[in-house]
Image 1 (cartoon, rainbow, N blue to C red):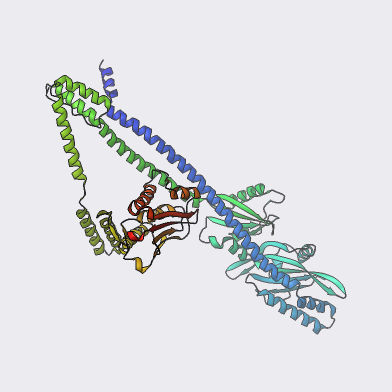
Image 2: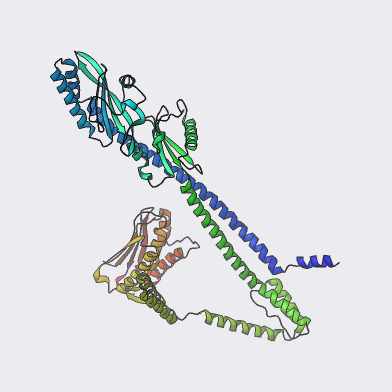
Length: 607
């Protein structure tokens, strides 16, 4: 049936393609799963870190708020404990002489004026007495007989007086509109305390009130967030009145939070924020902290755009890594399969030639052929010509050696060509005023020459240190000067001689392992001095090592990691003992998370 034959052809996929598809699926699926897990984890971490940072900022805001209001509370204390203020009140009520009364009132104005300007945000100071009299002094009006804010306040002077004198502590009054000053509306909140005085031999009480510009609270809450309109703070007092808010039109609005716990209050604040339209509702998050001292709630509102941008960045990074990983894996798989399929291709090609009548062909066996293919090739070769099997085997061996020799010659890089090429690149960088690149290339060239030319030679310490400077310069360039290098060498040892590249593995170990995951200022120091022996120390203030690791290294036992730097350390210890024998000493002193020092002592007769 033609239809069935067509379907069979479509399903007749080559072994190579099937192998590629299976390997891609088996390799890419774990990569995608790992990337998805990483993305999910990073997303959770970013959200948690943002939440912790916001909580920390709220706590800092609360501390700052308490400190500032304590300072204004000190002014209030100085007023209600001031003997001059108390005596002027007494003189005002105990005297019947009008001149004495006016003098007492003038003195009272002077006292209030002197306290008014002690703090920037104090807008008015008021005293309401038990007799119903009031003394005012403010920054706005020139009159002391009345205050600019009282006529707009929601409570009468009698109500304010009763609330203050019936409390033993400082009383806070919520923010309300006071007056329109040119170019802006003035909103005030008030701190009040009882002032005790004597008149006619009888103890009396007055309400002492400091009126403070709400701008103080706004600055405390959002001073660090002026440029960040998506992250703002506001304050609500214990009765639910808004004390401070980015939009002043919402000040003094009452929210129904009395008698509610923190979770319920937070829900009220979220609903209010959504209804106000002041903040972006998308991805909005809300956190609050309760100031026990003031009995106020400080609420932070964030649109979430800050951590969303970080999540988007991580998402792009994860996708990029996944795509690049997929491309790299795909290329590796294709190359690997092509390599593995070469044996099969050879067999198929030879069988096709035999089918056409070319009986003199032979299948050349190679080391990369699978065992099964080798068996097929051997049987086919024996079937075609058992007599020539030995000769063909020798030819195959010769051909294999020739191919290997050619490959080795082709893979070899002429050092002089490398040096000349680096020199050419160096001059190209100089022509373009790329001094930093030029210096790096020049240092690399010196390092390569030094390392390649007679690597086991004995050189002066001055020569070895000059090479180390070039090496450390490249490391500092690579790591963007993340560590400081100090070289303390006595002048008299500069002409002493040691084996080349003796100290480099220890220096590299300090940079790669010592400074990894260790915050702060990184410092690497090499000290060389002449005593009974030549004493060398390599010290870093990196992460250090555990005592067990130090003991194992000093006893000559090295843990074998798949890590070239650990292998380099072991080889460095072995070279010192090989070159200088039992008279040499090398040991490590380290303290975890503090420092590591490698001490090397070489005999004088080897210097």
